[in-house]
Length: 332
Image (cartoon, rainbow, N blue to C red):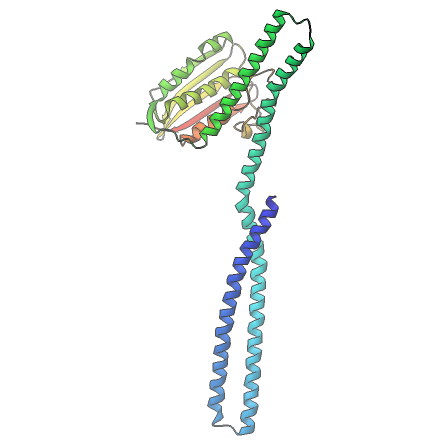
């Protein structure tokens, strides 16, 4: 589709270029031919008084032949020039058309992948619910306890759908959302976020270490709490029991930083460039049997960071751990 669009766009570019080139060539030929003709007439008029009729006739024919030859060379040069413009302009126009359409092509491909992944993720819990309900309907001796278990399982799948929908809506609304440029305390942001994970960390026997300085940053407090929560959830989720998660805050070169590091399973170097993609899971698992989630968290974290004119970086080594560092504009 985009190749055809590139060809059409190239034709438009070439049409504009050749219109200008042919127009310029016509003007050059018109002015040059008039100048050559006028020069010939002046010479013929000048020598008319000094030459005999026979010599003048010969001279006039010679000058006319020279004029015709000059105009012929001019036409040939202009044709060659326009052929060069057509060739070089065609190649350049096609390259420019491809370059112009490349972002649109990438955007469309990303949209297609997003739609396919979203369909897959939505279909998984729905399929599970359908299968359970169909089995229950075929069982004529379904007990009350089995019915309760079925409803609990369906409720769990509904919860997954709700979380997935919330994540998708968060990403969609974030496309046009602007972060509020208030000055917020990152210590307060991290403290609020850690309150959500205290019990989870205790249940998994994970020790949370903090190095919280009183560092301000520009941004929306609620969004930043969500950002830290995503990183904390990711760290705890992929860390083994008895390990440690560290959260630190510091300021450097007019920027404020939040760093969340763990001693978990880590990420392969080949997978690092893709971990911020929607639905991407570095463990390559889409069954959610080992670790829950849909691969939207880090995509949302990156979107929140970008809306705050910041950046997020990750360093990781397999079986050694992962560290996420968020840079934000410093507050006052």
